[in-house]
Image (cartoon, rainbow, N blue to C red; front, top):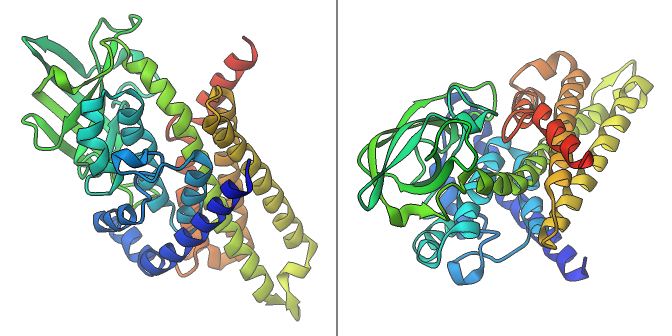
Length: 379
């Protein structure tokens, strides 16, 4: 790793932090309570280069690497995990899928709009009855002359209603057969493609999570990404990078919860002195800081391997597993340090607590990460 990369990372972190303090922090509580998705914010983030961080300059992106990308997600999530989640999903799922597997025409058509934040991206793999069992998906794409007809539903989709374009994985073969899924690009406004129910969530409430519905949705073969039958293989490669994103999201939430607890422990007095001076509190802070540092090292190790073009399946799963579980532990301890105030909305601990849990579920549960890791080490 060069000094230039480290300097870039630090500059990006500071820039994103300043941006977040100005545009996000004043709105956190209102957005959370109203479950308001601030679409206009992501256009502003796009103008700052944050919506196409991994996209080469020739396609309108900033052409940076995963280390810088992780730094940006961490700083956004340190302030509001909802914003970090939406930014990560846009970059690493929809946009990155087109970047990695699109042909030149597809890249020229979609990447500039996505990278600049003019368009928001969605990515559809999960279905109501097939979470981890993606090989048994019910959304189908059937050949029709020179195109395809999509039918089915996707759920728990970030930007499922507001996304301007979606990468959708649909079954093109028999259930549970090998190579039975294909990826397609579907634009909002295509007849038969609509947004469905928006989820009323525990946390991450300012990040839109909704259904995508397909009813006789006809698209041309030019909207197909890669070869027929490659959809699930492509998805696994996308998720390798996506797990780094969720590790970064988790790391940012953990930092935010820790920052709040540390500041409170220094200010709150009991028995005539700050509660940070009591071992019961200081040891909690020590454990939190240690777990965060370990999560940081795992996350940046995975980012460096990804930038080097090396296999990252095991390392990204390890980073995602440890960082997400760390976020939950740290957020839980943050509430405990705040005591009764930690259970109120007047202080930030409760929101970090609610937001953290999604990190152990989205883009593969902790149990799925252990499955991925065990398969890699038992090869």
